[in-house]
Image (cartoon, rainbow over all chains, first blue to last red; front, top):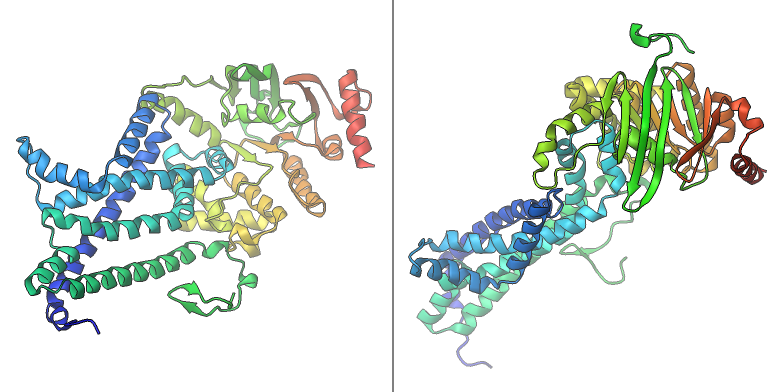
Amino acid sequence: MIAGVDFTPVWEQRGALLSGIGTMALISVVSFALSIVGGLILAGMRRSRSVPIRVAGFVLIQVMRGIALYVLLLWLFFGLAAAGGFQFNPVPAGILALSLLNSAYMAEVFRAGYDAVPPGQKEAALALGLSRWTWFRTVHLPQVVQVSLPAMGNVFVDIVKDTSVLSVVGVTELMRESQRWAQFYDLPFEFYTAAAAIYLAIVLVVTVAWRRLERYSRRHLVHAEATPPRRRLLFGFALPGTR
Amino acid sequence: MPAGHDQDTAAGGPLLELRGVTKRFGDTTVLHPTDLQVRRGEVVCVIGPSGSGKSTLLRCVNFIAPPSDGVIVFDGEEYRPPTPHRLLPILGAREERRLTALRSEIGMVFQQFNVFPHLTARQNVALGLRKTRGLSRAQADERAQAELEKVGMGAKADAYPERLSGGQKQRVAIARALALDPKLMLFDEATSALDPELVAGILAIMRQLAQDGMTMLVVTHEMRFAMEVADRVIFMDHGRIVEQGPPAHFREPESERTRAFLSSILQEAV
């Protein structure tokens, strides 16, 4: 028996934890959306016909991949302000740091997606008289996104978990709330266990939802007549032995 | 010469003319300076061993692989290799718009079909109509359906390519190209990736197209098709046109290389 384990205060502070979850969700979704945009831009730069733009894209990706979130966050929030630059609010600083770093990862995801689309698709689109922009929008991007979806889901899960780092600059997301109440009640085991369980649950929900999205995006690739018998699923994963 | 063309047909005037068209990749020249004229309504078949530059020739015509050198005249308009703008690609926008317009007048059918897998058969055909001819979605869908009927794919208009056989995919690809009323059709080994039993159906569509007066440049390994349908046959080898003439000419070809190639594929057919 562990002495004095008491989850009642966790339940009492559910309002604060829920608000932390809300902040986390908001920051995650916004950062993910911005990372997609940034990733597309960076991946596009890597594919540009212009040499300077290609080089700039390469440098940006390498730099962002080489910086830790923690470092970038402190640099943006404290570093810039101290240098007489700009004082960010915590949430924008967090979103910016998450978006910048994950843009670089997303660019790599899209790059692999680009390579997976057969070159004949572009030739056919151009031969049809589509402009490059129309080709990109109507032929290329839908196929890149479809190929990239699984890896994009991984980036999203990483972002969700990485929002916990933002607590160091005072963003009142789930981790910050947990810390605060863990100290207040002096119950670190209870509050941090709750936090871990909540992160795990959210990641599972995201994973299941994302799998559904992937399946939906592949609906035209599944032979109707070859649909496998319904499998027993747990959170979107096949149970062992049920194929 | 088939009848049924506009007034600008101008007595067998060439629709397409290549002057000294060359294609190099780095140090290798895959297409040596080549001259070629195709009259309106003419069907020209290009034969030759793989790697002889046939496909490259075709890709140069619509600038899918822009030629390194030379001039292409299509329908009275001159087109030259685009200037590469390595620093500011936007400077090439005007040239590119011109090439985009050129490509919308030339239909192309590929060996690997290259239908768009994320679109239904109808959407495949409608896309070009909407984006290059400015049709509304409803108009484009209606026209696409009509084009699919013509190639016997009307019943499969809502199917995604994944559910279609190779022959059916190629039919969709042909409908997609024909929907834009092209002045010239390019066929790049359109039957080479098909199962043998599906080849005849595609060849029948191409034959009908030729009878209807379409100007066609056809890269093919189907010697019988070339002999029956072509107004002119071109034999290419090592990036050069070696020999050309009416199909009858190829019963007694002049060049040793042509003879060797023909006997090799005839043996294959036995």
